[in-house]
Length: 378
Image (cartoon, rainbow, N blue to C red; front, side, top):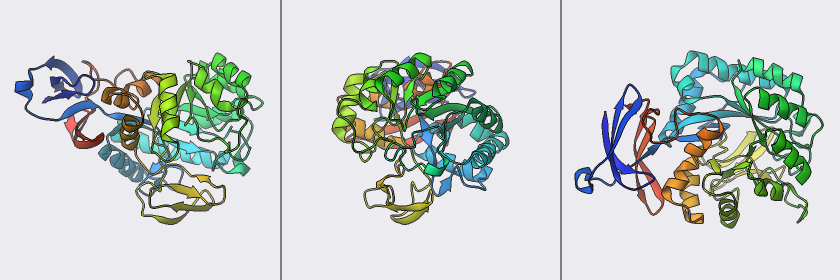
């Protein structure tokens, strides 16, 4: 396969030659030879997807075909790699859900190709209202290396990220364990002090999960979990830039502080993504999908995840900050892949996977025209 389009980073026309699912050669070509307005970029990598299109990755009877259907929905939005994400639940339910996802991956070549691992968000998070978000309070618990080992076994060694609150007793021991066993540690749903956050980074934490969310509305102006995470260069924030979870100026500040190479975009989509507005039951409470796409947890007075794919975040960050198109896409591809050591994808380079997007851009809106997965147009 040969593709001609504009490079997403430079804007210059290139010719891409693909063989056996791999980018074999990239050549710059004159403008006169390209003759189209298409851009080409690597597919997006979303590190936090709880579900979509009515499919909840934590549902009791999740099947392979349902997870494949969710993957197909994500593909249409440009996501070629994603981490199924499970939030705080009972141990038995987490074991079941991890087993369901792993069984689906064992059965499906598509899922094994698109999913490098599972993100476990909780259950070792802050029990405090606000910082806990919409995670069920009855299942929040203290960090335990032994419990994590059992969960890793249930996942068939597929857990590659754990989001936890470092202020909890036993958290540092757990961070040590993860760092030594190839599990990326993220700080999230936390009311940690600056000293506790610094120590977590010292022990190996590298991500701030959806920074600015999973946070109480009322916090101390000096002593709160945000400043230290913003100031520590070792922590890469994941940001939900759907225009609902954070204000545009908050996103702009994060971009200015962290820079284009130390920030990633995420969706935090839940199974309600793509559903019509109305009232739904989720996590044992009532959640409203509003006209603007917000998912409102009426009981906890907070957002219950997101309804927009990561593409919305790319478009918004172009509107909210001074970043370039290449920077914005890189925050949803190359930057993410680097964190997880996914060296075979995430950039337009020879030898990388041919997981690609062809798109036009109009007023910072990405209009996807084709998706290439493993060298094949889908």
